[in-house]
Image: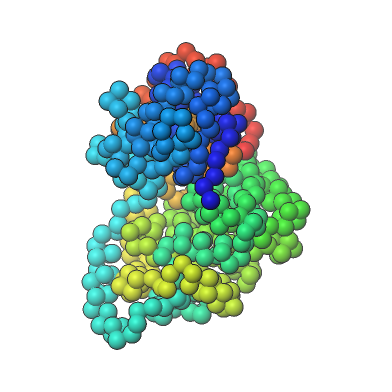
Amino acid sequence: MPGSLNPSSLTRLLGAWNVGTAPAYRELADVVRLLILDGRLALDVALPSERSLAVALNISRTTVTAAYALLREQDFLSGGQGSRSRSRIPSRGLAHAGGTDDGPRLSGAPGLAVPDGILDLAYASLPASGEVVHRAFAAALTELPALLPGFGYDALGVGALRAAIAARYTAAGVPTNAGQILVTSGAQHALTIVLRTLAGRPGKVLVEHPSYPNALDAIRAAGCRPVTVAMPAAPRGGAAGWDLDVGGPGGWDLAAMESVLLQQRPAMAYVVPDFHNPTGRLMPDSQRRRLVAAAAAAGTVLVVDETLRELDLDGACSTPLAAFSGAVVSIGSLSKSHWAGLRTGWIRASEPLIQRFAAARSTLDLGGPVVEQLAAVHLVNDLAEPLPARLATLRENRSTLLDLVHGHLPGWEPERPAGGLSVWCRLPAPVSTALAVLAPDFGIRLAAGPRFGVGGAFEQYLRLPFTLPPEQLETAVLALRAAQARLDGAPQLRRSLPAQPAAAIA
């Protein structure tokens, strides 16, 4: 049943929305639109009445009326004046939804098309490893006739692909057979299956904070409650400043995770230990052992997202978490290493759990597309072929982005990632949403920091992918500098956006 949002809840989501860079009604509309696109404001939710929101925000009702009217014009709200307006995504496309000629043209979120001329920094994904993917699909088409006499439905996945994935785990030190693998339509699909099977409504799920936004969305959609454990802020002065009892060289607060696991005993824990999204951190083996032991003591199923594991930019060594316990559930994907368009992922677990996952999957779909799985067999077997060139390019891009941020954005504090696809950057002030609202005016699209958290956290952080080529990264950073300059020039900004303490990410 569609829900509703009370004035205090929307006020909290809005944060310091009125920064003085545009008329108040437009700023209010811009931030509400961003909340909808970012997924922080769910669809088909009734917003507060104009009168009650005006009282909560201490502004005139006329301002709220004008903001709601603009959002209805842009097709982000349904309903007319005098009735409860409900959040929605425009049905007439982003050209209409982007706003009027005197306002921002697009406040973007992942999952929506990007107009020409806009550099997309909301996604952390690479284009396809072209020739390699093309060859794999060409080979798959020659192999397809052998499978055509069958029905084409297989909840577990094509046998050859399951065997290839199992062989990779075995080679990494985690003995695995094909019966321990279930092929899915990407990592998000895999997580949805795992949540339905292990957590259920209204189960608790431990998550790192910040965390992968789509995972947070999946947890909420499953009717579960995320229980957050803050990751420590990166030390000023480099990795030598890590406290081994708290963050360790990888930057996890294991003492806090152990405490939450034993006190709250969540049904499952979702973690990204390999080049964590969004921070890029790598959990050391010593912390992996502690985490596995704590989860076992709490009776919590540990679910590990290894989607970014292959994107090891510094040649670091780590042991897959499943090597420490047969109870660990691992999720993987080809989306980051090869191409998101493949939509091929998997779950590795014990054989009894795999059978439970397959039964749960039947309520979602009856199996994945066969041609993609046949192509994936070749990609998994030849995983080393595209990676060296891709990693070399990513290392260059990472270096370029860090140099550009240091050179053009004084006061911004980027954390150098050990791998992955993005940099987690601390801003001089909690203006992440404001920057995301302004960004399309300067030709870029951003995912605001709170997209990676729960309860409006991370307004002072921004994830910057380094997946674009160096010349486009330079254009993007110069655009960020221009957007920052506009915010700095707003007289109300310094009064309404106090700096947050640097002691910890929360």
